Image (cartoon, rainbow, N blue to C red):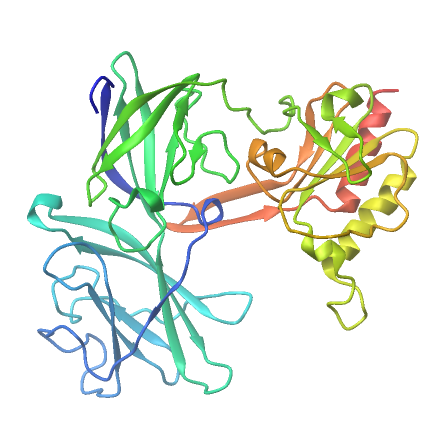
Length: 402
């Protein structure tokens, strides 16, 4: 890029990217009676068995078409994956017990060696999740996969070096498609990468990377993800940090009733900020009892608002742009303000969420996403603030502020 300073990052460590922070798409894996690749030896641990199904996980950019796996369905699902990518399953471990999902499917995780073209880096490890489920109508076994792997290393900015990680959403084992790339950088230079959803250190595909007030645009990434190039792209105010104890970002939006409101206008009272999509709110009859779950949730918050009519403010922001001609919320308490604000969702880096904000404008409680790794396997989830949790947070705030 002529006239723009370029900076290079070198990434070597391949680490599982925590599930909650990106939307992984499970890709279908067709099962066959014979492997696509020519395998050197029989499957270890099941000599003489001929009733295997085979599949191929398409990964990388090399001549090798991908990673072969074998499945034996009875009496329990047994699976072998060519983790070493050496075209034999005779030296690979047999896996029986998958982790059962809430919907009854089974999930396994493997680390495989992906082949890249000679100019793309040779071979590199890659983390893959496999999911087995049965078709509810035919009863046939179906296999799906997704990659959940990122490269981590350092980005040299000349005067400083910061930690950086990249992750591709397309589960191909390659990182050169910038439209699929999620980037995390140590934006506050505290030595840690915060990978949770909505973090000020995670940037989606196409977003400029921001470190302090400096903006950088992603220019290129090698297929194997080991080398990244960015160029300087200007300056901007620092991204707000969304965490308990931090000041909630201010905003202004028009309400459905007409007047505009701003968060800062309500300093002196606690505020409950509810971010949500709007279409479910206008549909009260999606369940057998005539009430949708989303509408029930909204009603609960409106009832809660009535309990704090004199002491707290509730702001409901519809973060989508659904072309609804009319939204009937019924009787809305005077301390509740409802409006559309996709830009508010952008500011808070989420379309759905709950924040309890104290009278000084600081976040006192919010939805919490957690993640960890146990024996190399990713675990995580999101704890959503419900009406009971909001009630407890507001009660505590009002008690402390008396």
